[in-house]
Image (cartoon, rainbow, N blue to C red; front, side, top):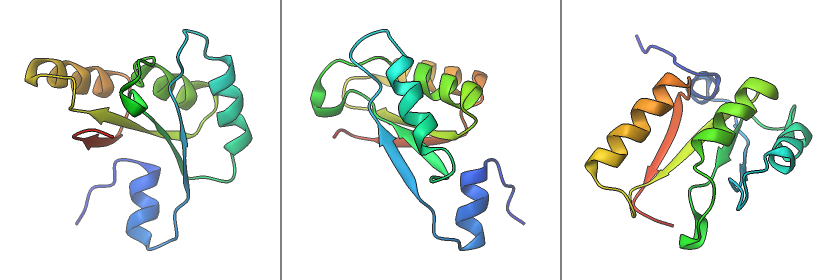
Length: 112
């Protein structure tokens, strides 16, 4: 029997067609625009992917908007973790932080 950890996992295991959307983490510390985008997606997507420095350009760490969207908007997020600019210590730290914040969906990539 498979343990289900998230609504996204539950939807995928049920065989339903799943919609997700992608939001960039943001190039400033202001989360208002990100929150507004997430609110507009509520009811249309199962989860929102939060990008990690797309195009190798500096953005906010995606952990923050991932957590805030889940807390304030009520939509699960997929924390995108790019290994490109992190060593093993940094990856471990980010994964521990994601667990502490209740981020259950993580997409790990080598780069863009």
